[in-house]
Length: 194
Image (cartoon, rainbow, N blue to C red; front, side):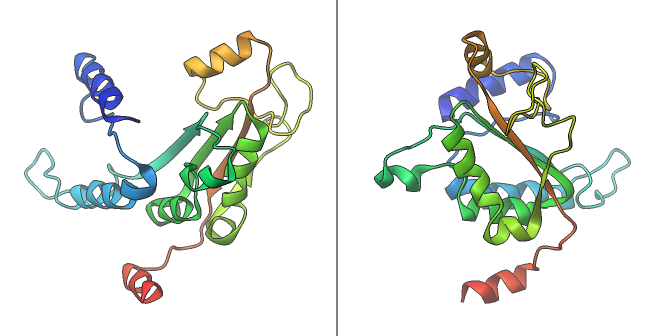
């Protein structure tokens, strides 16, 4: 989300009394996400609860659900590096999500969804995430069976989603669940990067 859009969204959060439950940040996820999630989870460790005691270190600041919806497909080979879902992003999500965490991907361009999905079924994605699809979830909204026909688990469509559906065009979706494989400790991370 661009900074101007995130500030507009954050103002709406405050107006609706949702501060502390929802927040928007403008950033480049492939550059800033690890740092932001580190700060987010560390803030839980020092959070003061109502009785003045220090928080338990994580139950409130847990990354449970990530959605990546309708990203720019960047078809040109020279622009591939600009794609949102990269191996580094998948690794960062694995690092900060607990078992059962959800990553929801959707696009109106099948090749764009397949490019995102590819990152979750190879390398660290293959180790830490399992694609979720049962018979009921894999049917497109009109009831016909189609690849990537998962219903939107959020239940609230984006503006892009509404526009695409109004044109009777398909939307491709898939969902990944964080499995129970533990992410290496921070010291293992450091050793791997040396």
